[in-house]
Length: 411
Image (cartoon, rainbow, N blue to C red; front, side):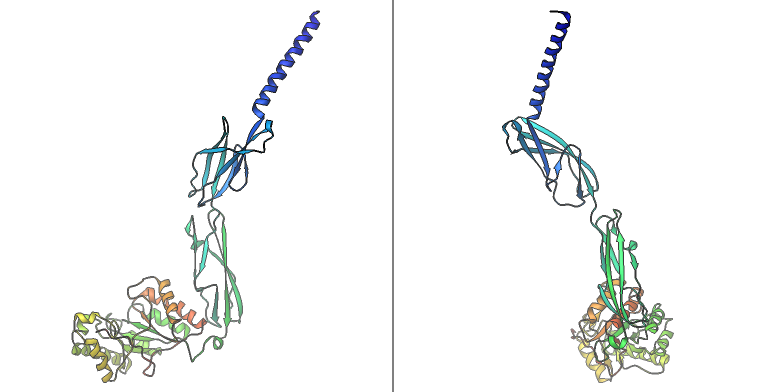
């Protein structure tokens, strides 16, 4: 055989051997495969990126199917084991390795999980999504809050659009928008119906008597200015607990409010020591009222109300006696049926507003207890008045002809 023939033979043999090797490799590695699928049906391969929601409660579940091409099988479930963790409570990228096995064969892939915040903030509109407002009355938004699952309180980021024309009857829409740090956006809308006061207020019903105890004090002037703004008249159960503010009693009367008696000292141990001690203190306050206003008052409120039990500490049965004695002497005592909570339950202006609004909705005639010596409570008055006027309530001062609210006497 010639050298040329030998070379051709060698090349041919080599080609056959190489082809055989390649064929064996292909047959060995390609007659079976594993197909990975995520819990939501997504097909997975190595380095597949999967996005999951922050705070998601279920961990991703992956399954695999083993397919043997030589036997034309449709596939059999494979065993899948995973390594690596995903923190669903914190944003970030996490790699999990899934290894599928069937008999003595196996295959592994890495899946990249991206935990992202997909939850928008929640906007809560104080006062409700639909409110009424009195025509010509200065509009102040009842307020709102916005809370995000990651960023927390995002109220400061809320943007409000829209306008309420208090000088024109009609329906107006205010839109509230806020985004969190992940660009998730939330919106809310409030509908405001501007109506004529005659349509809003029914003078024969829904009466509110705002009353203020323990003053006058450093915030009484501020309160009087707020009341003037809306033409609302109230009742002050006065004391001399804050010397130096006595002139405000005259100012209260001058502006058309009712000045009533709460006792001079407001010292429980002193006023409830005996029947005589109570009337001595009451008469001293009445004298101060006459000095400031030119006339005495017939309307009183007991410190702690007629239902108070602290008086037991100083004199058993004194409230049972005093409620009868003040009546015999021509006085009218008045308690309350709506508490603002400003006497110890809260120091939050928004909570005072809500307490009063919730309370007056339960009565046709509401006597509200507040204290003008507490600035956070004084700051709540404007919103209370605005809501009341917009929702059909009429504010009146207590007079000697008004119905008096009486508690159950407990001492």
